[in-house]
Length: 67
Image 1 (cartoon, rainbow, N blue to C red):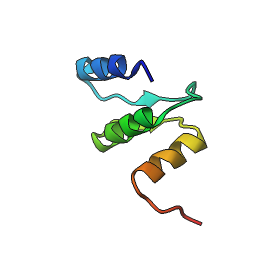
Image 2 (cartoon, helix red, strand yellow):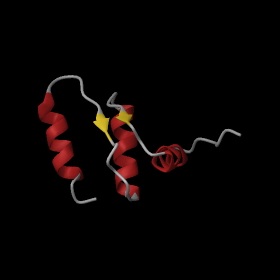
Image 3 (cartoon, rainbow, N blue to C red):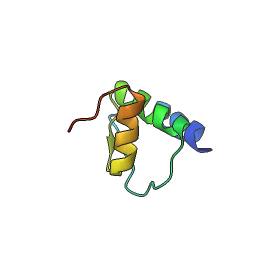
Image 4 (tube, rainbow, N blue to C red):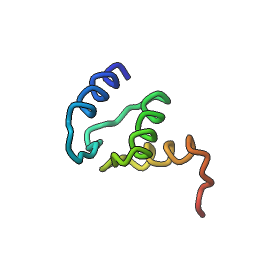
C-alpha cells in the first residue's frame, strides 16, 4: 500500500505508546501484512483487524492454523 511510508514516519515521531487501528482497513497486500507483523514484533499492536487480515498475518509468520 502506498501509505506505509507515511505510517512508518508517524510511528517514529509519535514517541509514546501507540497502536494501529485497522477498523476501516478492508484491502491489504503482502507488503502491508509484513509491515503489520513487524509492528507487532516491535510492540505496536494491530487492533480491530478483520479476520482475514489476522489470519494472513499468522500465515506470513509461518504459524500453523488452529482447528
